[in-house]
Amino acid sequence: MKAKQALAILALLAASTAIASCSTGRTADTRRGVSGAASIPLRDVGLIRPEIPMLLRNLEYPYATASLHDCASVAGEIGQFDAVLGPESYQPGPNRNAWDRSGDFVEEQTIEAAESTAQDLIPFRSWVRRLSGASRAERDALRAVANGQQRRTFLRGYGASLGCPNMIPPPPPPEQQRRRR
Image (cartoon, rainbow, N blue to C red; front, side, top):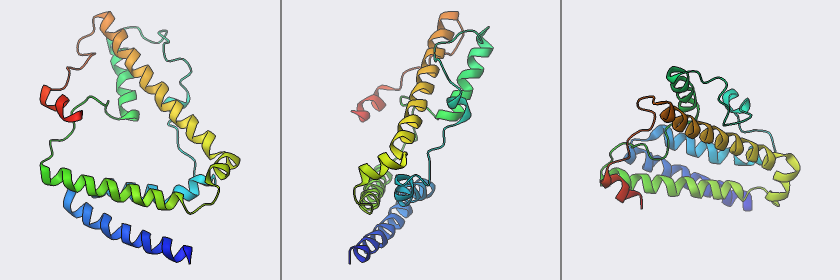
């Protein structure tokens, strides 16, 4: 009976996700969120492991300066981290109207509900994650991303101290700062 309820809930969530993706225009993000939610049980038992990019896997010490000879080498390394980590949190995103933002809210709620349902499928989830090594793998991936962000931030400051132009991006406009709060 519980499996039938879970399937019914997942079907309902899939339908609401389809509606949300139509209204927001972010179909790829919606698909990625739903597939991420569907893969939660597989990640919990260790069948799917988070992939750590080679750049982050090989990062041992985020404050090393041996390979940094000039502004071009600093900017090149920042570019590599930007490609792997994506934009930084303060960089401006797309300007979206109220209709799109309301669709984004529906989409986010739908994906969170799908994730919650998928997490409930495995009994004693925390123990299963611990025994399968999924918790450790997730912690290692999060630590690698944090080290990469730390390295990118260090490189920006180091480049600025060398006098390199455009190392520190300008702050976001004031109206964007107000929206984030």
